[in-house]
Image (cartoon, rainbow, N blue to C red):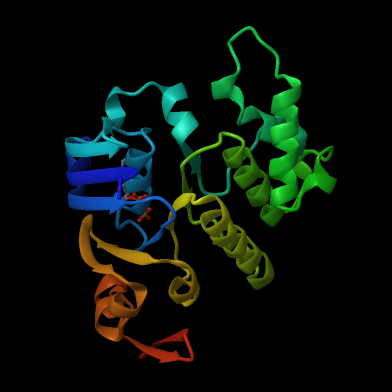
Length: 257
Ligand code: ADP
């Protein structure tokens, strides 16, 4: 099957400090890949390369066989939606306005949005269940609602893949589950591919088709979540001895000390 994103032997440094090396990754339509790893392991940096925000120092990052670093921003935004960690919106925009901003790649520089764009924004807000918030200021909704607004903004880009940086980290268990369920529905109903960095080991077994674990900028383990979520790999990834127990498809992780 054709890949949406394909990377080979990626490396990246900030100034002279190497933060990623030897990264190979590919994702086909309708799959969900979770990226785990301790703080500083390189997850956010990798996601920024995968959505064209950062250019790799060496190696290749392709979106449907095209080199990302050679694509322009609009072209990338029509294929890839990037949802950063808790995006801050400094200006007093309404939720509806923020979601409509996702249509920018389809609207010319001197044009206003059209009826079609407003309709697409409405549908995206309905999909993630925030249409009732459309006239609220983005600065005055909860973190979970802001994250849903951000996902709706990504959806109106009509992307083939959504790349999310810790979409559920600051959320309580109800909102975290809601967001993960919405992502899974998008994957199953629309064939959207999803890559998400996450600290949520507990939900990794439920939602992700594949898991990649980064450690100090390299791939420590990858495969089906069942294969890579175990005591030995997680202890190495997080630098703390843990015990992993799996029961009825659920996973429990305990620190040993
Ligand atoms: P993670 O998302 O897994 O926490 P990051 O990709 O944010 O990891 O960071 C990887 C490494 O790169 C860390 O050592 C971090 O301090 C460093 N780093 C991240 N962003 C920058 C930056 N803009 N400039 C310099 N170093 C950075």
